[in-house]
Amino acid sequence: MCGIVGAIAQRNVTGILLEGLKRLEYRGYDSAGIAVLDRASGAIACTRRSGKVAELENALAAEPLDGTIGIAHTRWATHGKPEERNAHPHVASSRIAVVHNGIIENFEQLKADLQAKGHQFASDTDTEVIAHLVYDQLQQGVAFPAAVKATIAQLHGAYALAIMDREQPGLLMAARMGSPLVLGVGIGEHFIASDPLALLQVTDQFIYLDEGDLAEVTLDGVVVRDRAGETASHPVQRFEHGQDAADKGEYRHYMLKEIYEQPAVVEAVLEGRLGSDKVYEEAFGAEARAVFDRVKAVQIIACGTSYHAGLIAKYWIEELVGIPCQVEVASEYRYRKTVALPDSLFVTISQSGETADTLAALREAKESGFLACLTICNVPGSSLVRESDLALMTNAGPEIGVASTKAFTSQLVALLLTTLVLGRRHGLDPAVESELVGCLRGLPALFTQVLALDEPIKALSEQFADKNHSLFLGRGAMYPVAMEGALKLKEISYIHAEAYPAGELKHGPLALVDKEMPVIVVAPNNSLLEKLKANMQEVSARGGELFVFADKDAGMVAEEGLQLLPVPESHTLLDPLVYTLPLQLLSYHVAVLKGTDVDQPRNLAKSVTVE
Ligand code: HGA
Image (cartoon, rainbow, N blue to C red):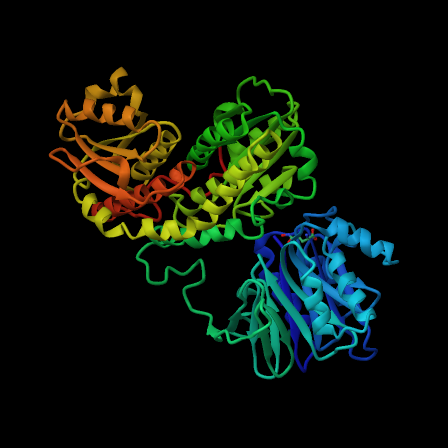
């Protein structure tokens, strides 16, 4: 995903900008560029390269830039191919340079209007219209800050922007709407970045911009105005130790830290992907629209936890999109003769993007007549991302605990975004998309409420630590949630755990039920609840111990043999996300009580790069 760095100082800022871009490389990108105001001539000097920041660095080593004010960018294309001419910064009439993260929805209309006025465009990007709009305002005699303000008033969509004017060598403008942006505060120098990590080499003092903010950044300071034009007084905040992924901070284990990161991770996976009432399909890549227009079936391939995410997506896709969706573990798929349905999208899911079986399945699929390949992945630049036509990054940040937690929920969010984008083409009511977009926006807060169940879950876990076996039950999309709950428990506590669709109990596993076999049930208040209650009766009648995670309104009462943990209510389609967190916490606390190596369970590896 794109990255922005900007700087104004009394020294050459090229090195600062380049270092900032390197620090943003982990987000993934396809090209990079830097523009400064040349100290000698005052002209905009701009160098861009497709490919890695190292290519840009080589170009700058051959022909160095020298300027005390500049902007820089790593691009992940949404509009226009990943080529040098589409790389940022975009420059209008040698005067205005712009770097942009996000998507301008109305760029086609704006571009047509500007072209009618004689503006000439050098790229296929949506971003370039911003540079021309600002320039157009300047031509009408509007001052630079007001020109930026008038420009952003015309933009529909999401943006973080850093803008430079050749005629204003002491001023950078920054604006934020729907994509994050921070200002870095130094002594006699100031900075802009899409992520504070980009600037830690020069400052640890940051001002976090709010939606709609517009900032003037000079050598001496920053002035931020909110969307109403009032001066905003955001505090300068010190970047705290512990925001580093490789640091456990206050947590005893990475796994617990990663469980608690999930509200922020949901925000990260949604970042820049949601309009006011819809999902941006461009977030899947510049070629996405042409592919999605043709999709009539979906084949999902994954392993382990990612496979469970795929199973949940099947329920979503068949319900909301109404097209067939098949899901299979990669190690099976790759070794059997398979048949691709016509116009089928091949979807891989992997945290690392290097999962050997999944990668092999992708390579097989490319020879099998699929329409295109999409990967849902957490590591930009990984093999799956490089070898797929489309990618949706999950932006969960490095996951260090071997048992996947935040990567799983970020995959689910990404798969729900995919479902909505496909649904739009298959008659999904826009009101449903809009409602779900609203629910997704509320998900971080809902996750925070669910995490508040930690203490009661910890108390519950004490009843598991001496058990050798357990059964997880769910119905519908909650069955794969039960599968994921069982996998988590066995991975880190080494307790044997099996998951069943509750309706299958009577076909065998009921024979196992006794007092020594805890039965964990995920029971949201959905259309299958009454059926599920009947299955729970089957367990109780045989002396089984039920541990039920249920919606507050599910009408369940705790009683002898039934312990109840109320879970906050959510939209039915979001229940798989919401009910996953209590199961993660349960496994974690059981494992801690058992004294296992929670972050590195025996016999397992994080990134499974072998067959
Ligand atoms: N729409 C712009 C920026 C893309 C972006 O923010 N990607 O993460 C472009 O395509 O250049």
